[in-house]
Length: 355
Image 1 (spheres, helix red, strand yellow):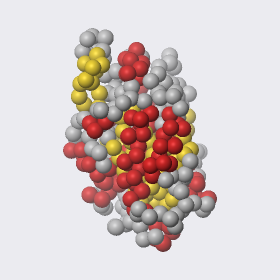
Image 2 (cartoon, one colour):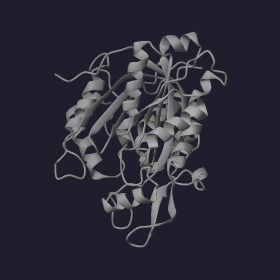
Image 3 (tube, one colour):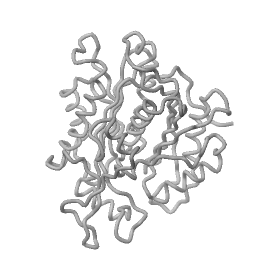
Image 4 (cartoon, one colour):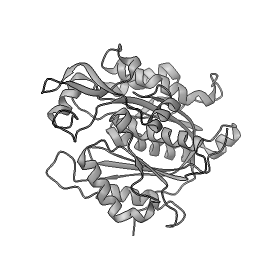
């Protein structure tokens, strides 16, 4: 019997915000991915072992921002404000909004005390409550989303702000990526392009959206996390058990096995490991997809953006739903952390309400 995700009322996405190498707002970033625009360019001074400039994807307006926590905060503040826009500038009737924030795990180049500095910076800049930080990298965004869904289901808060922020462009981080054989370029066609981004989503219950007359952008109908034990950068062989389990969890929430996934967005980044685990998973579950090969991997445009990935996928679903309302219903989002976390969510586009 397939494991099941917890069944609960759908939670609404009512605000989005993003800052990426291909767009500085949610809609601009999504439009660029839709058009296949790439944000790749040569790093201004970092070179690889072959003496060639490293290829990265950086946010252009951050080129003069110093490295460290300040760069991460610069990626976070404007998207957080954008996502909070539906609440208006005067939020005196609303308690400070709880913040669930995905960040990179400990790694070379990660700024010291990043969790506290980002949480304090966002509290001062946009008035959020103290943050709950989830430092697991890629899977963190959808893990933060799941934590916020639980909080809203308890009924103790009206809104939650969920975010993901990451940058691979610290000098020590870039050197670490190359040392691990993961940097794309030169004679390594199977590495990834380091990127950076920030993305935020404002969530609430359907009752709150209706009472406050907020436009519903999408509904999150399922979310879950599982764990893979056969990890990348080890001698073990991954056959997609962790990813299969998390897919089974979220698919179990759909009304029947006849309900299929229309649209898939994932964090595959050019590394064979990720493609292999998805391939093994589809060998087991391809019957639950309209077209299992029809996927979107936005790392082709904005590079690998780590902990920002999952929430940026929510942004893509929202914008595509606004443009192509009725063409797709169930969107599956999935993310894969090097430490083993596998997270997934299903969003309902067809039932999105107009503003």
